Image 1: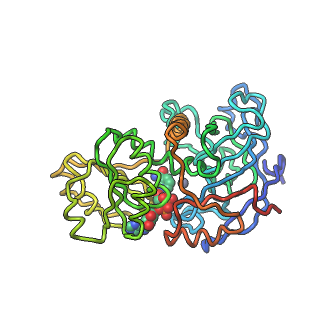
Image 2: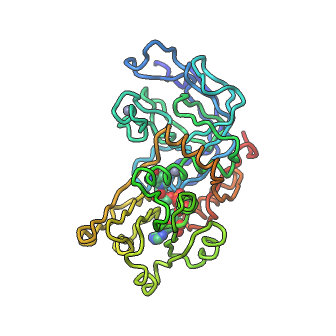
Image 3: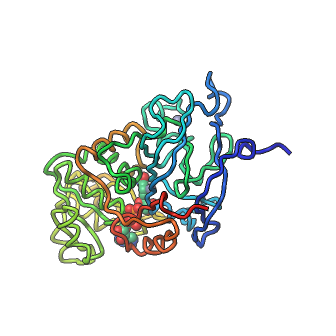
Length: 372
Ligand SMILES: NC(=O)c1ccc[n+]([C@@H]2O[C@H](COP(=O)([O-])OP(=O)(O)OC[C@H]3O[C@@H](n4cnc5c(N)ncnc54)[C@H](O)[C@@H]3O)[C@@H](O)[C@H]2O)c1
Ligand SMILES: [Zn+2]
Ligand SMILES: [Zn+2]
């Protein structure tokens, strides 16, 4: 029988994988592709592997999408799955065409590790919307080889999908910017939600939500956190810099806040009502949906029509914009508030994440975790 690409070019890697929808992660030995397998029409004059960067993983953030995936919430998980797409590490090897990076450089890897490079989206630096975009994990390269994420000791990624990690950003608290950061930054730019003095509501104060507060303040907005948990109020204001806090389960306060917001970023990970959020928006207000609940939400049309409101969505960001976002964060001192864990603590961390018991992002210290 013909050997698979992994068998022909083994790169031994150690990581943690979930094997079924219990979502429990355990040690997993696997192989990564050593060379870049592209369909023949995309080879051009390059040799396989020449554009690849090998990265020793130092830190990896724990995104709620990792949790959705290990639990198969969305119904397309292929086990075993090694999650992780908020990766910071150090370059250990470069292919001969690589000119953006050298051995020893600190780099970031986010949600995608491949795309077709030729479609309209790719040509506009929107690789994240390429129909052949390849996710960092739970996906396949063009040749069928599986992708595995950053809950592992090593990544091999084509140069185009690797980010320069600015000197001023810490590797641990900076790692969540690779997904949470760009997921907030990109729609704020695209939907024009950066006009100083405007009022931004942030719905859901988790990993994405807490960086939304920080970006909002960096753009000079008035920021209100909309949350079900009154216990987060003090921190949201004192620590994260929000201007106010609205408890969504308090009808009197919600009523008083009707029609006061220009934009709302909704990061809630579960099914929830949209009518109260639409009510908070002013005329021409924008509600941007970033959370990915496993079931459709109900969208009331009357408030949209009678208030000329807009509901939109957004999926991370392209490589160019992700680099721009990292540089913006370095300049404005934006990082995530994190709880650093070791790989062995991941299952407890996932249980806590499911209960929204994290301030505000778990980051795995890969270098100080047991490797086998
Ligand atoms: N659009 C994208 O590109 C993109 C990128 C990353 C993550 N996501 C998705 O965004 C969501 C949030 O991710 P995260 O990492 O910030 O998760 P998180 O768990 O850190 O934060 C989610 C927040 O939602 C709140 N929440 C949960 N259920 C709620 C409910 N029923 N009502 C009100 N609030 C509720 C939680 O308290 C928490 O504060 C996830 O669904 C994730 O898959 C989307
Ligand atoms: Zn993510
Ligand atoms: Zn493309």
